[in-house]
Length: 192
Image (cartoon, rainbow, N blue to C red; front, side):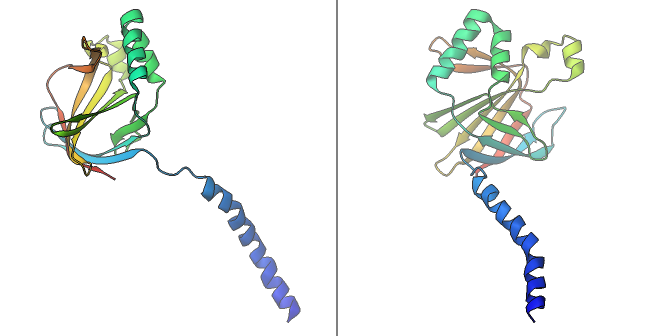
């Protein structure tokens, strides 16, 4: 009877070691901080008219007023290439289709308006090798701009400017210059 118990305990030993080793990993896992939104991106005009895809947006941190002033100064002093290079290194969250990794969010701004909370997200968009090699005019518009209008529960809608270019107004507020017509809207935006 004693040898049978010993065999049973010895056979459980590898399982217990694995479980004990996993405990520190589980407690060290980062907890979900920031804000997470889901939405449905709906194509409004050709070439994506009538199509819809689920979208995930995860915001880790906001862009401070000081950071925004630094970006404005960088754009004024060193030009658009310097701004693009800086924003390619910044990661304040991620946004993209639910079935893809998406792109890094480089700028996150939040404003209270009469309509509710406005959330502005800017990321450096992925460009195709064809676009880069052909010196397409869209190369002058290297960003994706998402503007969400949210109520108190974190629900609302939004729009996407893609491709887009950044500029600052006289008061130092961030603005977008769209390449062309609006192609995508965000519907059923929900905070999770």
